[in-house]
Length: 299
Image 1: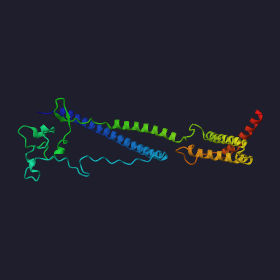
Image 2 (image 1 turned 135 degrees about the vertical axis):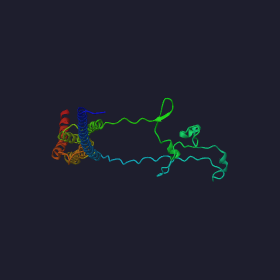
Image 3 (image 1 turned 45 degrees about the horizontal axis):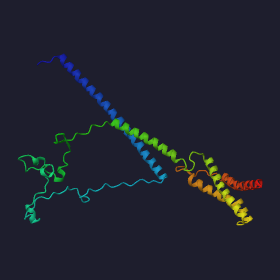
Image 4 (image 1 turned 90 degrees about the vertical axis):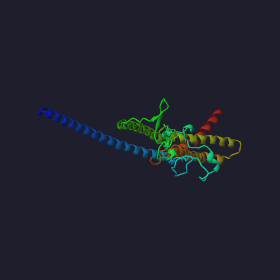
């Protein structure tokens, strides 16, 4: 068969075109692999940063990283032993076992015992093991099988191929969701437990005023006790001018330090000590003066 020059040239052009197409496909595949590797590196960095940030949040709220739990050992197997279960066979008088067990039935699993027979169950091949070279315990796990409607064991189907780009996109979305939840957790951690939506100044004023009001109630109790003769005038004046305001001031200071401090904050939040001192040492005497005016007005 003679090939003309035109046919040879057309074949050469076809081969050259196929070669160029293969090179283009290889370049595209190489570029895709580079992009995938870059995406994997970037995602690894994001996940590492998220792990460090979660550790910081855990330390801030007093939760340590849980220790790794060792995998449970298989029941019926000694630790460090990988041997499968041993099936005792028939024993005779010369085997070192019980002489009476020589006439008993064999306990090796077979077709009648519910165990898989394998190749040994084929007619005429009783001397062939189910899986030669494997222990009896591992023979049943040698090949994965799926039960068909007819009841025969067939090889299990392999899992479908996974697209790396799709998996990376799903991982990126999960990382974005983790970032969003982490930002929400940081915002919550930057708020104190006491009056979280209030400003620090308003919170301090409310705390010192509340402690001063509690001291005012104690002052009224002292005034009533003084009216019945349980407390003298000097003691009442000392408590009104110094004792109760000092207790109110230190109480507000401790409350702001315990419940007015966010879980994650750099340094110590302001407690407005001059403002608290002024509120506490003015509120109790002013409340006493108001009480005297009220009593005189009622009289």
